[in-house]
Image 1 (tube, rainbow, N blue to C red):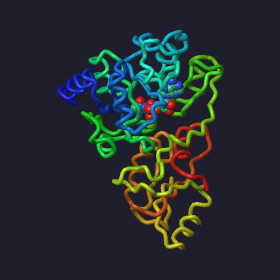
Image 2: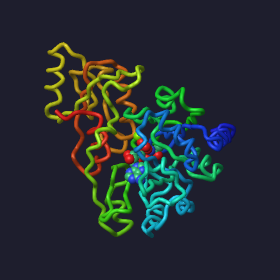
Image 3: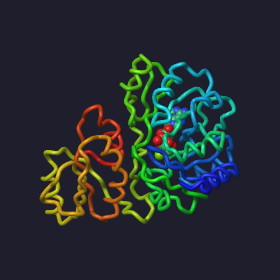
Image 4: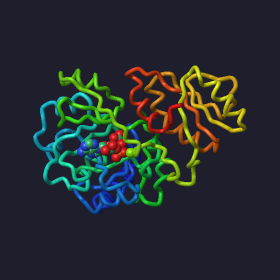
Length: 322
Ligand code: TXA
Ligand code: MG
């Protein structure tokens, strides 16, 4: 990556502008977290309700105490084990954190992203960057710079292209202020991994926040099929559903983990058999399925085992169970 772009990004962020940054999970739409006017631009650009708090991105745990207070030891243990990486910690907010960042709550979400370019930006910026995923509110999160350009191209001052995101789904969010400690959003780092580091129980918090679904009917921008309904279906009922859909004279795209002879290229999107690779390309493939302009997107359900939890969670938001 060229140094000129990195310096430009730092300068724009200092001026209170918006810069789309690559991370290992998804692209973020970043602004100076200490500047409420800059942060306000994020909400405007995304069309995001102001009560949805943002994640503050920092270079490393050395600056945790700038953003949080009463930091438990386990936060440092987790940072040591997983940062930079796909783990966001919810801690008690420091009084100096603007309330627009935290949606008026007294907690703040913090993470150190694992991407070499964004690490350089953070080190030169010497502050925190508030950054939600760089998509319009309710859309599929972006995993390439091109996705950001399509969704928010006009609203950002600079998009840094750091290549495709290697994890592909958003970070695990762990709430360290609750007892027991809860996972608010599953991601690449599991409750078990966290529990193994801190030697405390960690539970998954049930959330039914459909408002965060990657696909919100009627509100997608026009360049991808905004109204493609998407369903997920058990493996054994998959071929029957495809036939049924066709018999009704409807077209469909299928995301499945095996080849299905009845479905032709490109309507068949063969997905990886392991959860890590599946997660990495899921959003890219959902966007692609949307581009095919079919009547229905059919997703083969994934195994209901713990290592598929992050993928299950994202599919629950993106599709309807039938
Ligand atoms: O991987 C990620 O986390 C990406 C990259 C860009 O870092 N970011 C991301 O941001 O997914 P966003 O805004 O799309 O999701 C942030 C989530 C929201 O669900 C929000 O409710 C939660 O973090 N959150 C933020 N602050 C919180 C807080 N104080 N307490 C509880 N949840 C919080
Ligand atoms: Mg998001």
